[in-house]
Image: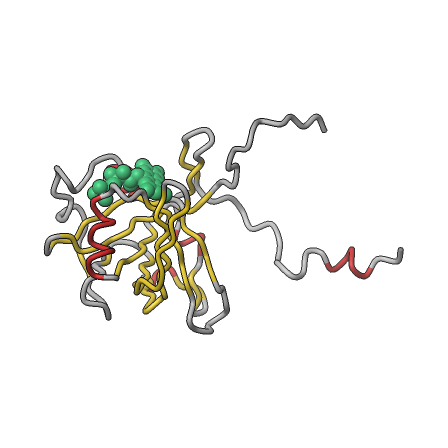
Length: 194
Ligand SMILES: Cc1cc2nc3c(=O)[nH]c(=O)nc-3n(C[C@H](O)[C@H](O)[C@H](O)COP(=O)(O)O)c2cc1C
């Protein structure tokens, strides 16, 4: 292997392409966010936290700050054009509220996209500045999933068909194949005699 140093670049891609929803001036506003972090992950244990890295200039940020609530929606590949669109125009000068059908859930100010296979309602728990970006850390309040995307009661990524984001080459990707089982694929090495 011939490895080159390419500078201190964030090469942690692909990441998941999401659409964040918030209420701004009484209307839902949507923006594409591909820098989402999973915090305090657990299988069914609460509280669980998700973080989004957002530039403070975005219109959506004002709604998150004002109401302390937002949603994270996972679009499928079929929604690629709309997903990209809400990431290239701003609610500051374009009304994006009618782009998606809205679903309201448990929280009063975290509009969700009814068309997305998965939506997560978040209550703002903490805000941290990291350089140029505001990191909104949300406590998960409720998660919604299209029944058609469940297999044996669990979200099935093949059915969700999410959009993956590559910031290094500026590309969207789709999911590949299942290649193994976590906490299992390494067992052969663990048991191998040394
Ligand atoms: C694929 C994609 C991913 C993006 N990811 C982020 C992100 O993680 N953080 C961010 O601040 N902006 C991100 N953006 C830019 C915002 O979505 C964009 O500036 C949007 O127009 C903001 O909308 P608003 O001003 O209505 O809130 C992304 C845009 C695209 C197309």
